[in-house]
Image 1 (cartoon, rainbow, N blue to C red):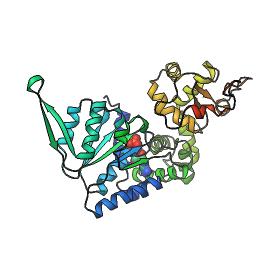
Image 2: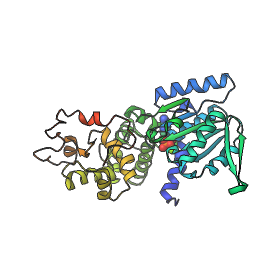
Image 3: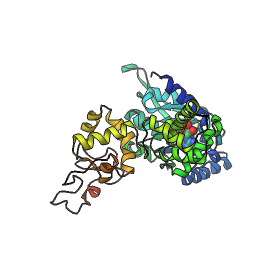
Image 4: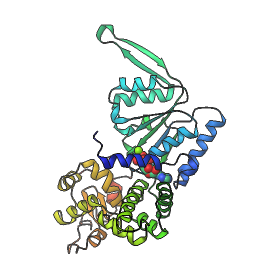
Amino acid sequence: MVAAPADGEDRATEAALRPKDLDGFIGQERVREQLDLVLRAARQRSATADHVLLSGAPGLGKTTLAMIIAAEMEAPLRITSGPAIQHPGELAAVLASLTGGEVLFLDEIHRMSRPAEEMLYLAMEDFRVDIVVGTGLEATAMSLELPPFTLVGATTRAGLLVPPLRDRFGFTAHMEFYEPAELERVIHRSARLLGVEIEPAGATEIAGRSRGTPRISNRLLRRVRDYAQVTADGVVTREIAAAALGVYEVDCRGLDRLDRAVLNALLKLFGGGPVGLATLAVAVGEERDTVEEVAEPFLVREGLLARTPRGRVATPAAWAHLGLAPPPEPSWVAPPGPHRNGDSDRRARPEGTPNGPPP
Ligand SMILES: Nc1ncnc2c1ncn2[C@@H]1O[C@H](COP(=O)(O)OP(=O)(O)O)[C@@H](O)[C@H]1O
Ligand SMILES: [Mg+2]
């Protein structure tokens, strides 16, 4: 992977801004309380903590929590990711090198290959892997005992995990988007660590444009800091924050360029939809996954876009937000026919269906 300079800075500051223990982790009260119990109980029994699955949108604190779990258990942490493990042999190598009590963090666990997934869930349950050594007639099966370890899996798409894998996690934490007040606390904390002077109204302004996501809060804070430093005396006020975020094309609801591009295409090219996800992605020149996992969850949450079995449709709020008049016969009204009651969309697609509606 090529790390652009901004990316490098991003990652370095991100690491510096990570809370180190559960007490320092802001928000997610339920998850924190539940996890605290799991870890305390394990510590009292001097046992290895149960396997933990963290699910939630990017930037909500999954990696941070994985690190906190290891720190709270005073255990070493090994980090790898689904895309890095395509062959079961690669997973066997990682598992075989674990020491007792170690925390193995498997990021993007839904992107592991099926055979690796199978090996993993056997290892999670029996602390054992079966590997085949050699090929053809020389091949022999070997069973390898593993020391007890805690697997922490992170995923943006819990629904994509095969049930036997999902079921072997003793605790699943679903991370929610953050409330603006929680993001304000994140921003004040980060400002303190970065040595940035910020007024409460400045933090409120940034929090309101952060899409419920601490990573975005931290990123916007750094851009606002630059602007405050270059154009003013470095103090982040509400006016400075608003002006800076205007420069970076983050609007008052937190929509960025990609979000607006998606809405624009949906409204102007497709008359508000319904349009398939793949078509929409092509229209904005982005990967399907990026549109589905980065832009859409936020647009849906903001009530600007709806996912229906026939495709993506814009809501009246989307037309209003872009300052456009909706067409006379709004496309978001269900057409007459068997699906008339307008509830059919929800029934046709139960919540949590992994791949979203058919395009
Ligand atoms: N609850 C939180 N309190 C404070 N900062 C947080 C919190 N959650 C996330 N962050 C910050 O947001 C950034 C992204 O978090 P990260 O754990 O990398 O997200 P994820 O792994 O879910 O994409 C980190 O720099 C971290 O400092
Ligand atoms: Mg992460």
